Structures are given as C-alpha cells and as structure tokens.
Length: 113
Image (cartoon, rainbow, N blue to C red; front, top):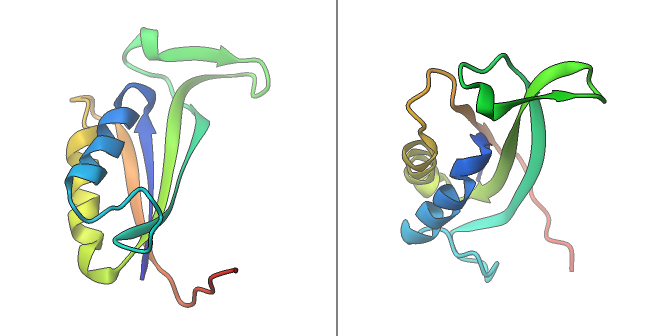
C-alpha cells in the first residue's frame, strides 16, 4: 500500500477531487475499493507568491502565507502512479511552485472496527 500526500492550491482542490473520482480508481464512498481514508485539510504555507492575490499575512505565523489544501489518501500499489498523475494534472496552475505530491510506502495497516 501507498500513502499519497499532496499540497494543492485552494482554487484547484475541487478539480483534484473530481479527477480522482473520474480516474475510476478512487471510490469516495469508502466502500473498500481503490483509495481509502481520503482527507482534505486546509493549511497555510509560508511563501512569497508571484501572484499577490494568492497571498495573505498570517497573524499567527507572522509571515506572508498562501492558503492551500493538504490531500491525503491510502491506495493499492498498482494504482498509486495513476492517482499521482491525476492529482498532478488536475492541480497544475502553470506557476513554477504550484504544490507538491509525496508518496510513501505503508508498512502495516490495521482497520479499526
């Protein structure tokens, strides 16, 4: 199994979720098929953005930041590359630093019932 984490600009997250559904490998119903445990969290990344409309000042961090979403999911090894590609294509903004995707190996997983 693989874990995929992606940091995606806020205006692209809906496109990414749609692309995961459209891939046919990511069942959002958590019925056990495709990818599992999809979560989306709003995060702030310190970054001097080339687009000032994307940037704001965080009082908590005392830094200029951009708002992003962190997408996390777990999937079977054989679909990891397909899902990563779908994320990359649908998250693209044309900017040089539009986000990141990380993939890690899951050593062990236990379903809690």
